[in-house]
Image (cartoon, rainbow, N blue to C red):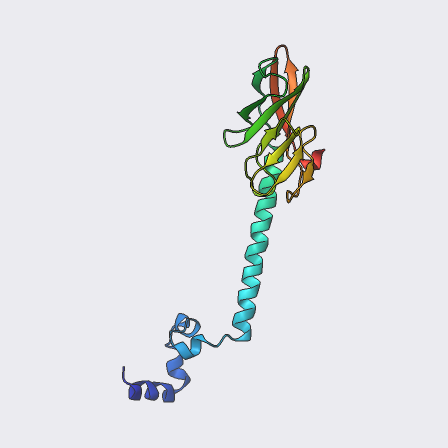
Length: 181
């Protein structure tokens, strides 16, 4: 289409404008028009982006509530006396994608925590010498008795695995998060 044809089309007026599809008006392929963003277009972008972010946060909140409400099947994780005092046994609970640590702190004292740091989900390790759980990624430290944050950037304590002794077995029966402590 030549520039004369385009000028004639523009001069023809609103009658021809109705023939231009809406997407042609909204989506500009001309560089000069691309640099200019109108108030309405900017406002529409802000509203839609804000709505999408709100919907995403609501979805995350709903998923976290559903996970807490989901019934967890109890599972044996170790035999009493299997781990020496000060020893650690890794296990997965409640699913295969949730690594945890079982720590034997005394002759009859066992504690278990999720192994993911609450900062950026790095794997925490037990330091027997310092009696704490350590995150090597950003030097986050957690209490080996309660999972509370001792130092570093983690915002929340480690989720604790609820244990029950059934005969000579230790059974994981649930997960206690910071809101349930």
